[in-house]
Length: 150
Image (cartoon, rainbow, N blue to C red; front, side):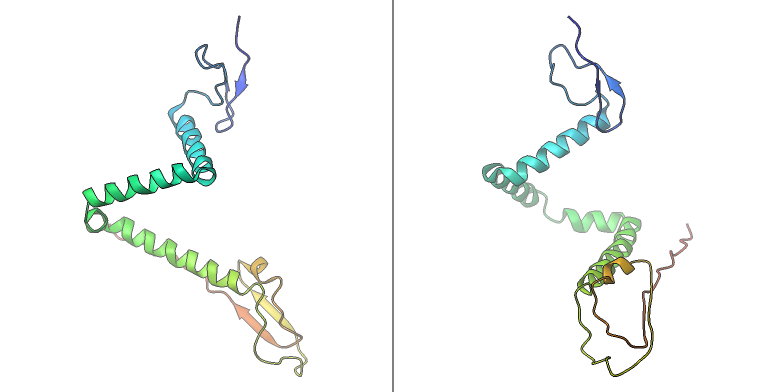
């Protein structure tokens, strides 16, 4: 008796489930198995309060045993620190833009008659922003990637 052929949801390749695991969902590639385990963990973590508590306690024990790990890692990996700083600034900027989505400007702009110009790469975040009819220009800065010499 042969098992049905399945398609891996992560890489799309065809695979035959193991005879020992007929309900196998992914191929046997390590990346696909890791993604499946991660998805299982996230789902279980959200759904099971006891599992969530066990994970948190495990994390706390590890941090207690490895005090100063983050500080040492950052000192030893300055490129990572700088890259993380840039991506955090980008995330912060997106968060600020999302906060503008339902924002009403505090100034009464109805008395002015002009056009509104919105310029930037994340304008969809401003769709519900009430600007009234006025001559206002909202500009979003574009971060120019720094060229590192190394």
